[in-house]
Every structure is written in C-alpha cells, then in structure tokens.
Image 1: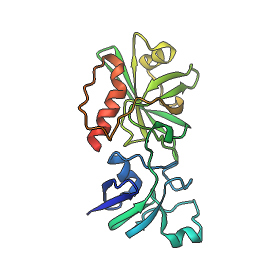
Image 2: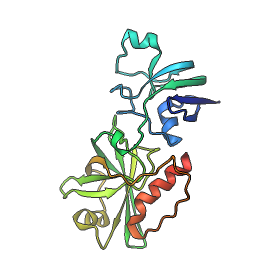
Image 3: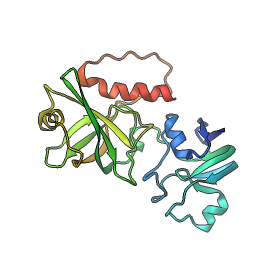
Image 4: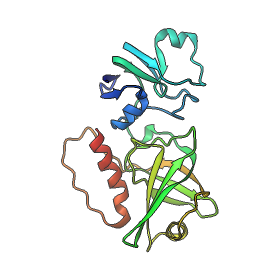
Length: 229
C-alpha cells in the first residue's frame, strides 16, 4: 500500500510504500532530506509530524526527549507512514547545505568497459551513508594508495552503494589499481562531498550535456537524479 508524504516548508511530496522508511522513500524520490547514519543512531533525520500518523518500523538507539515526543518528532529513518502524512523536516537547498563527511567503504563489485573504463562500486560500512547532491565529487583514498578527487557516478537516491569511473589513460595510481582489480578485502576512505556542479531544480530551461569518457560520471548522476524527481 502506498501513502503520500508532504514535506514542510518546501511542499515537496513523495510516495512511501508499506514498511519502507520515510527517509529511504524520500531519497528514492530525489529529495535531499537531512540525515546522518540512516540507522537511528545520530538523530540527524528528525522530522515533526504535523498531520497524519506514522509507525516505527525499527528500533533506534537515539533517544528523543519527552518534549520532542509530545511535539510529534520522529526519526525518518525508522518510521513509515500509516496513511497520508505531513511532516516538517529540513532539506538541503544547495551544496553549501551538505556537511563534509568522512566515511569508510569496501568493494561491492567492479567491471571494465571496452578495456578503457573501469567501473568500481563501493558499499559504505554499516551504519554509514554518504549524503551528497547529484554532480558532486569526493576525495577517494584506497588503503595503500594515494588519494584522488573523483566524481560520483551514481544517484544520491542510494547513498549506500557509490559508483566511480576510472580512465585507463588518466587514472594515476588509483586508476592503475582499479584496472588491476581491487580485492574484496580492500578498504576505502571517502571524504566529501565537494563541488557545485549540481542540478538547479527550480529552473525550467532545457539542458544539453556533452561529455566523453569518464567525464560522463557527474552527468550520469544528475540524469539518474532527475529521473527520480
């Protein structure tokens, strides 16, 4: 069963499915809600229910105060909607609203395209999730290698699995390792997000993107994000 969720003060709306968390549904729909850990530990995804009812779907370690409970405050990562609801919650209006984060990740999968581009997908460690806007980049440091600034090729709708593209001709130390193949035991540090090459969602102008090779990475992220809006 689907329910409609309206976010104040932005007025943005999205659909949440049965037993799907409000946070996951919002991210899937392309909204940049505030959050931190996504598992109920940090309290960064607080929202205040102003109309309708929500239901908790998982336990959370973060303790809401009695005053917050009386006001209808909930953790969006741990609740779903029981019917249509309206919630007051913070959203990022641009890159400057996204805090700098430092998280760890491991190899999820990897593949090589046409012998020239290595696609590497990393899964963040348990209890972590990267909050970013489509088009941004991060500083990626594999254990034992030099750091490199690289665009995120995946959509912010999934902050658990992050996709990166490496060019065999311009990859440097980290690119060489990507083509040699990272191991399942390899660990990575991700610091970011960085950059202001993001989508202006208020603009009604048509967009034309031109890119080649791994320069398609931020554009792929933006297009996937736009499809989810």
